[in-house]
Length: 490
Ligand code: ADP
Image (cartoon, rainbow, N blue to C red; front, side, top):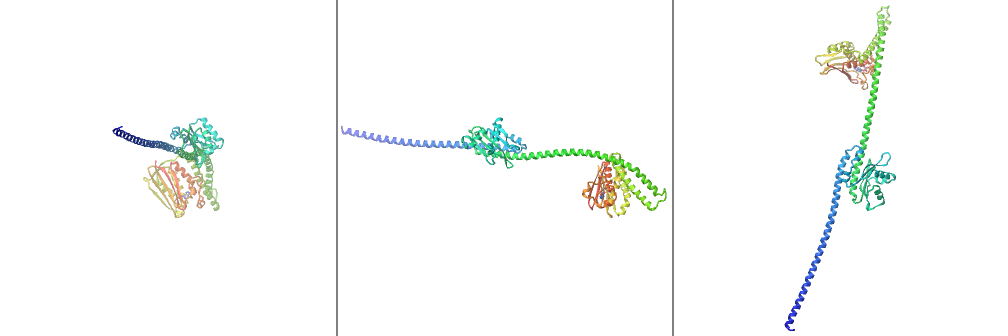
């Protein structure tokens, strides 16, 4: 080997070595890069997994949130309907399948304790056949199982795959549901039943959120039951009242009929008796006059005095009998009013003339105040005069000395209104409503002294009513009395 060759070989070996070193470095570099890349990929992978996981969790939360919003909205709508329901059965009818499914369930039950027997009864059921609900009722009513569903403030949440406690397994069997919730219904502070919602399988689980929603619904139902109960009570008592009013009205109508019949019998009787009395009374009066006139011989002063008493008493008896007869005759329509145009002033003047002696005796001031024009009225002159004689006569009787009596009269297009007012003793409040009744006399000291029969005002009322008018009285004890009456102005 030449030196030249040696140099070449050395050069080649050196180059190969350098190449080897270079290659080795390059591979090491590549491997390093590859490792880094793998790490990055792994990190990205991990991040992607995390993102997917978070996304799933977010989706789930979103789903829950959507469910809750739908549930709340459905509850709100249902609540409005529940609040405007006044009948318990209508109330249970509100819970319909679309509504239950909006809340995310396929099964629903409302079971309420019967008021009388205390047994649990199905009021609404969804997702159950009739036989199934009957079986549920029977099972719950057999033991004390139902009690745990009615515990106030407690709810039962079962998702079967959790297999928490045995007790829940029992209910899962009874309600044929692997995933359900029951919440007690409370009314008037007492647990009266429960509401159940759920699904057949545990695929879609019930949540605590569902329990909150169902609790709101149960409390709405409880309040509504309470309210409908109150409403029903009110309605029933109203119906009862109406029935009793009807009964009383019929009873009163019967009594009224009876009274009308009796009144007729009384009027006929009074009329007959008065007729029978009038004839002998006329004879008594006649004989007394003959005796007093001395036509049958001289009469001693003592005898004359007694005869005058007989005459006086017979006169008041005749007046009484006449009044009685008139009342019954006017009442039965046997006396027709002889309606003619009369002068109000002339009639009142004649009445005042007639009563003048008594007015003078008691030093009473009388005033006539006529505010109608012309001063005319269409009425039966004699009967209207009797009205005034009685009213003004009473005013004089019941007004102490130096009192005042005012007779006034005003008119409108429909009627003329008269008033006889005095400053007398007045009528006690309790008696005011009775003064027009036959034979009524107030129980006051003056009444005991002054004479009267208690028939005057009764006759006055009959005469005014026969004129198609109306009479009433206002009075204040120790202040005075005002009788007012109307007569139509034809
Ligand atoms: P009487 O014949 O007793 O006056 P009335 O029928 O005319 O019968 O009156 C009945 C009762 O009404 C009277 O007894 C009296 O108690 C009461 N009364 C009537 N008018 C007046 C009056 N102007 N003031 C007070 N009481 C009166």
